[in-house]
Length: 279
Image 1: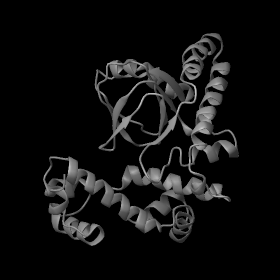
Image 2 (image 1 turned 90 degrees about the vertical axis):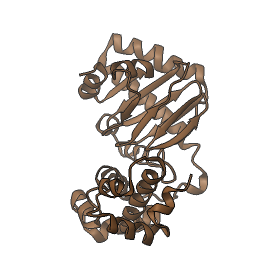
Image 3 (image 1 turned 60 degrees about the vertical axis):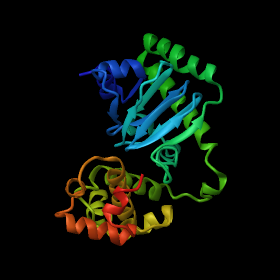
């Protein structure tokens, strides 16, 4: 097992240079966030691909990525990139922490990532490279406390970049929590589970309650969110994958190609073959 994995397992937090992580990954540049929340400090320009969608990130930005996401780092000459990974149990110590963790920073409804500018690149590099190393060498408890504070600072800076009109005046924390857990489960299981009942059972709430929560937080029913997810992922595969429509329908969890075609036509307004030809 890699050292980063051991550290994550031990304390639920790790801070590493991106090139070191890639080296430990046998130079493979594709990763999954698994159950962890990730913050990437990009001090130079880089292109990343998240869930098959490319993003060009200018240097001096922070990228936030929630659990169960696939990310690919394209090759770059610079090595000024850092990866922070942590578990929810590591960060959540209070109601405020839960609200931060379940905000749009990690669960952006418009994109798989949230990008926020680094206000002071030099200062951030000192905090995350020099100071954290000193804390780790001195005392693990201090290191954990410093890590929590550093993460909170990055999240607070990011929250300031959420448009005011998108911030709810009276957020229901329990609604946010369950809806975001639903979205994590959906990311993991959408290929095999496409019913509201499945996800409500996983969350130990009723289907009606889950729909009430999703409608409050997102303005959409739980059923519609499931449909939107399957459609979005199917479109990505149709547009970017070299697989046949039959292979894609099987990969998306449909029993046969005809059912897949009918589903896409009904909810996307186009046949899969029409979407696949769009470039």
